[in-house]
Amino acid sequence: FQTAPIYADAKPLAGVKGTFSERTFIAVKPDGVHRGLVGKVIQRFEERGYKLVGLKQVVPSRDMTEEHYADLKKKPFFKGLVDYMSQGPVVAMVWEGKDVIRQGRAMIGATNPLESAPGTIRGQYCISVGRNIIHGSDSFESAEKEIGLWFGKAGELVDWTQSGAEWVQS
Ligand code: ADP
Image (tube, rainbow, N blue to C red; front, top):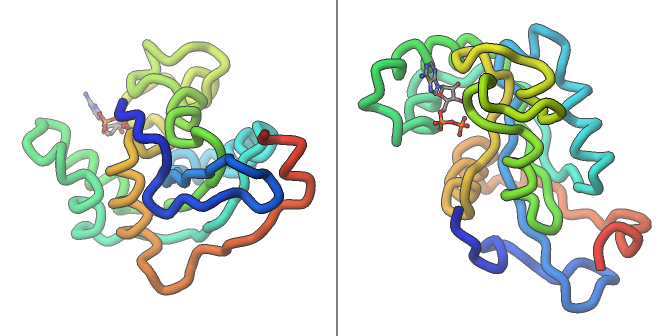
């Protein structure tokens, strides 16, 4: 994992001197949506102290899904992965806060549920790598690419100051 200090769009958190936030792309995949796990995922990020700055439900096109998973194009499971994701719906989110990219990955757990620690999202809710319910950016570069791909630059993200942020982040 690359540990650059701040996400490209980072800014000082309102009211909290000297700290920076970063953003990550999180998506509940079609199996997570069908199984009614959207609320559980949102609840975990909210309770951890992260701030939701983007949220929408979409059925991604095959092109979009292939672009999202472009680095896996040569994998034998690529076509199945695109079939799975592009049937939708996907609930796409952007979460903001201290270390949210790395923490998001830790909260999600390992790609293969056999290795996802109990208590992580995958470790609690799934058993199969091909149906692992959630995606989270794994680096600053992928967060930047994925937020741009799923939310574009059309002002779909909301900059807002969370009441009580100083009790979460110092
Ligand atoms: P992650 O989603 O944890 O970042 P990867 O980027 O390696 O993991 O893989 C992307 C997605 O591809 C996984 O979340 C999973 O849905 C799917 N996938 C990965 N490996 C396999 C596999 N061996 N068989 C089927 N699907 C897989």
